[in-house]
Amino acid sequence: MKRRSWFDGALVLVVVAGLAIDAYVHLHLAGDYGLVHTRFVSQATLFRIEGGVALLAGVLLIAWRSWIPAAIAAVVTAGGVAAVVLYASVDPGRLGPLPDMYEPVWYAEKTWSLYAEATAAAAALVLLAIRLRARSATAAG
Picture (cartoon, one colour):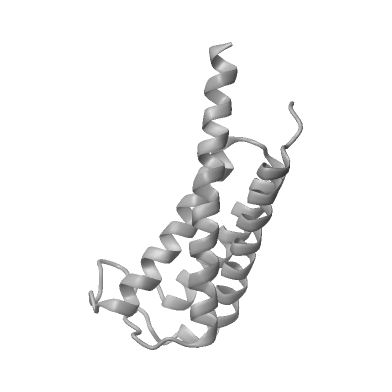
């Protein structure tokens, strides 16, 4: 396997740092959202899942030099950005089994999480493009 370039390594570092902040914030705040729930799931559970998935995505990105963990990291971080912006901007109400998580208030940890997820999403997309390009170049011969 080829050695990682410094740019690939820097992108991985940015994405992993963003995922770590994402995981910390969601796991730290999860207990505060136990009362926001449907009979299927609570917002606390969704926060714990997000935190766990962010940690897993970071570990995969460090351990496996492929386009797949870069794609997973891009989906996790971009999904986090979309969710926080949606639920801060509009009140979609209850969406199927998901509780009404509308929260138009911005506070430090929520802002940190958004910035970390957005930065990590951008870096993950660049990393994904680089790894897919390298993969197609290797396949082409």
